Image (cartoon, rainbow, N blue to C red):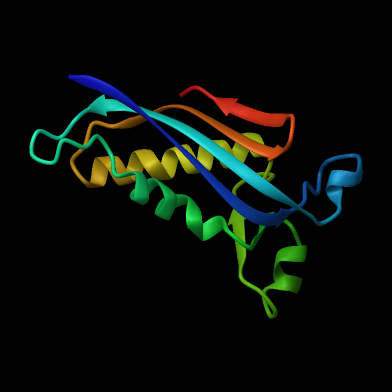
Length: 134
């Protein structure tokens, strides 16, 4: 039986878009909101598609972090003072949605589940989100 679940997670993080020609090129923070829809087959033994707490645990490492592109020179300047999460391209809401969806899918595969992200929204502020439909 194919089932869909939904989980909403919030985290606080700082980022900047160094290639952006505007104020988002400056280091700034958001209360990020992640909404994820996951679809797959329920485990016949547990009755669970994917544990809601596991989804939160996958997203939680982003909380209270600095997220920068791996090419951003600011990353090396901040590292002596604070952990920095780097991304292979600009840490936009679009790219963060892709990263989180990939982490969730990888977790599911690693635990023998066919659960996959069907849709994910990453809000960086009220009224602004990126939606990925893999």
